[in-house]
Length: 267
Image 1 (cartoon, rainbow, N blue to C red):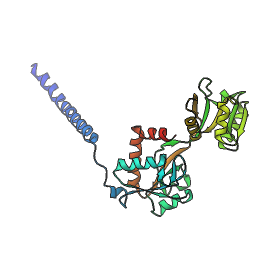
Image 2: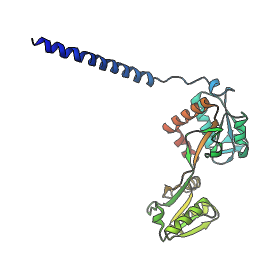
Image 3: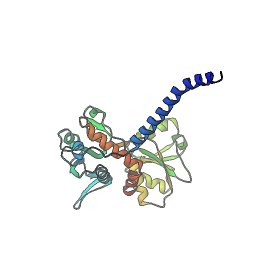
Image 4: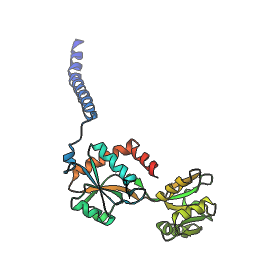
């Protein structure tokens, strides 16, 4: 009689156990299958002309600059790194900034890599990638006297570039927190004011701040991001496979530290 309950339990549990075993097998197979690295699509499927044609305005150092020896800068190195990741030759098409989107539309280039920010009036025509650099405003203060919020600027002197976005934002802050605004002709002059202890903080774009610190490597300062101005790449909206391949390569370069190293090299 004792065998009957056992047989009943066995009959109930066996299908459930079998299902769990199959689910485990399927999960293990799926994990191994999707973890296998597979080659991407052929270059011709990503770039119809067999090369990655890059539109760039090489007049904005240190992102891109033209010399007698060729093109140099952060955007140039970034394009070369992406092309290498995709196994494609790269060709640069240097032009004025105003012609970049037209060159993409008329199929003169495959991708724009030229310190672009999102232009929402063009999102019906282009696809933007992940951002690779933030050129927004930073609040710069001495590391031993950190000021990280506009509230910290109460009764302090804030240096900035006259008439800039920083100037507009600082005057809004001033309506909430009393501070003295010290306007200068250039961001570098505002940073001079901070370094020479004429101001307690400076509000400038991150590119100017980074370049200034390269010139004064022993200056111990703190950068606190205040706004975002994200640089991205752009491809044609009807070339989804091109965008997908470039965006994936860009994500890998962000993940493995390559882009961080390029930013450190140029900024």
